[in-house]
Length: 257
Image (cartoon, rainbow, N blue to C red; front, side, top):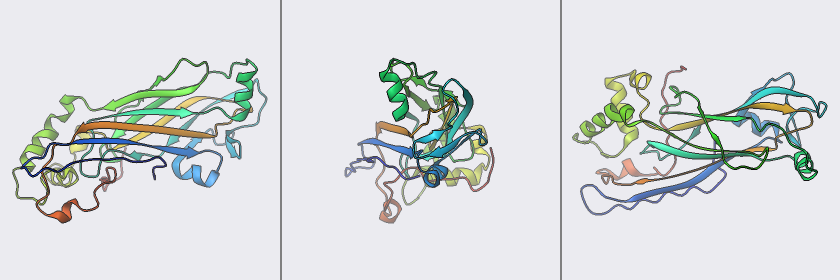
């Protein structure tokens, strides 16, 4: 899934064995729910027999005082850096009002329950954390804005960090390449991620709520950001560090949960 907002990653390599730096990121994803072909590449929803897409958005055209419970599930979104995944990650989500809902709000009508937003993370696109509830981001009545942070407890990271220290003792092209580290770990312990979820590589969102008659959702936007220490070893082989400015890209070869 391609990012629609600016992606910023800054890291400084100093002439030392392990270079201190800072890494900052701002970005996001927007799913246009007014275009079926585009939306179907980035999300699924249900109940399929009731909910559809028009140029006004995702929903259904029933009576205003009727509703159906349903859901929207996004495709996994890659975060972090291709060579360094994140121990934690902050996210904000907004599902703006449609033109009809804005008119309702202007007339003093309560748009209804905004629904619940959940998020989960995965290191490899196959093994996932449990769903975690995101909090309402503001106090505006009925507005669908949510915020929260996903992350791995330090206890979940102990074994991974042990492997990292062992890997950095080896004669490898780039001691700080955690994509290569993960491949090395899985050769030793193929089911490692079945027992440990030590970092955030991918994020997935699930909204659950009521599709009110005539209420359509025009879009869903996920805004993201992180700031971490950028201390890392410069690559011994420059090819190992070439074109590595994108998000995390490692995916487990097998299919699973």
